[in-house]
Structure formats: C-alpha cells, structure tokens
Length: 333
Image (cartoon, rainbow, N blue to C red):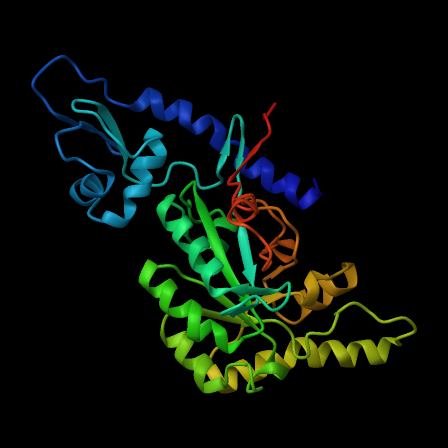
C-alpha cells in the first residue's frame, strides 16, 4: 500500500472502534409496552406487519431513499414481526473500514452499445439491459461521480452494495440505448468525452451532450485525441509539454465554452499513465483520474489512480457479476 494510502488508512481506521462505542451508547429496551426508543444517534423500534426499510426510513428519517442505512446497519432488508430494528440517524462509518476489511466500490466502464455485438468493446443492447436489471434486482445502488468523490474525501458514507457506471468516448449509442434504460431504473452515469470525437458520425454532438447533461448525467474529460498520455520515445521536453497542454487543457476550454462547466475528472486513454502523467494531470487542475484495472476502490484510493473495470461484449452475466465485489477481506491488526 502506498504511503498516501497508509496515511488515509490511519485516518479512517478509527472507524473500526466507532461501532463498539455506538453499541455502548444505545438505550437498552426494557420489557414494557413501549415500542420505540430514541437517542441522539439512533432509533430502536420493533417490526410491525408491513414494515419495510423504505417505510421505516420515511417514518424515522424522513426520506425513503435512506432505506439502505437501515438495511446495511441491520444486515437485512426483511424483518419478522417483533424483530428489533436499529435505525441510525446519520452515517456511522464513512470510511467503510471494518475489523474484517473495507468497503470497495466497483466502477464499470462501457464504450459502445449496439443491437448486435460487433467488437470486443461493443456490448449488445440485450446484454447491457440484462446487466442493468441484474443490478436493480440484486439491490445495488448506483452512485454518482460527485457522491463517489465525497466518499474518497471521507465526507459521505455509501451503501455497502454501491457501484458506479461510466461510458467512454461519447458514442451516440449512449443516448439511443443507455440513457432511457438508466432513467427508467433511476441510475446515474458519467460520460468521459474525448473532444476530437465530438460531432463525428457515430459520436454525440455538443448539442446532444448538453441534452445528456440536462438529463442529469455527469460529463467529464477523456483527453483531446485519446492518444496515450505517456511520453513517446525520444519526445523532447518542449514537445511533450505542448502535447500535454493540448490533451489536458484544451478539453477544459471546450467544456467551458460548450457546456458552461470545467471538467475536474479525467479518464486516462487506454487507462495508461506513469508518474510523469500523474504530475501533468495534477498541474492542469484535475482532482481525480481513472485507469482501467479490474479492481474496486476503497475510500483511501489515491484519487489520480482510481480503478475501473472494462465490460466487454463477450462477457456472460456470470462474468459480469465477477466485477461486482464490494468488500475486501483484510483483517485489521
């Protein structure tokens, strides 16, 4: 683990002890007719007929969308009559660190969608729909880029079964096939756009990208040309500096001109980077960046080395599911 990760680990490891302290502060219900006990941090109640995490979240937290807090804290979303239910009023473990390991967030990356698979990075519309409906049916929560970045900053606790969806290049197929399904399911997604592709025959135009943004999808940068950002053999300092200025600064200018916002996040073309690229990316104002590495992200991941798992057209549903690991077993000593 790199020193950055160690320092963040030390910052968040104290969360391991919070659960023990919480347990000591909970009010102890006595044998009585009282149905609800409440402290500053928790509500303890007993399940009645028809109670669900959603109904309890609405009743005690004022927001059905916080049902995941009840499910995660109690380890279940199904309650038997009279079962004791502990309802946290606020996040209790933003780091995701537990005595047995730590939470990781899988981030999936798609490229083109097509009625029939035509290449390795082309996923069929049928397979994509099957994968998205699987996520919904199995209770995965799809987080936004903003929420994920807050998780990395230890400012947000994410549901235990959290996943993020990203799409590279700005293919027209996102608007044709992905967007309607994602909106139906209530899923967010981030598009990483390389600006030389915008307006091409099979790519979204700036007008269409604006419409996608108005629909609530996040738009971030994927460089200017999609060329490898690492220094080429025998490339001079001056030539490399000029190329990086074009690859990293020009997209920010074009985003501001066409979308009225400046991208803060970058997806490395081909997932490739080295120490020199990391330095340049930081110098041009990007606060996080993503490679293509088949592993999830803990809260203490280095922001410029976050991971994404490529979804390929030949993957079966079983192959897809292998990318959804949300917890890394690693006993903390």
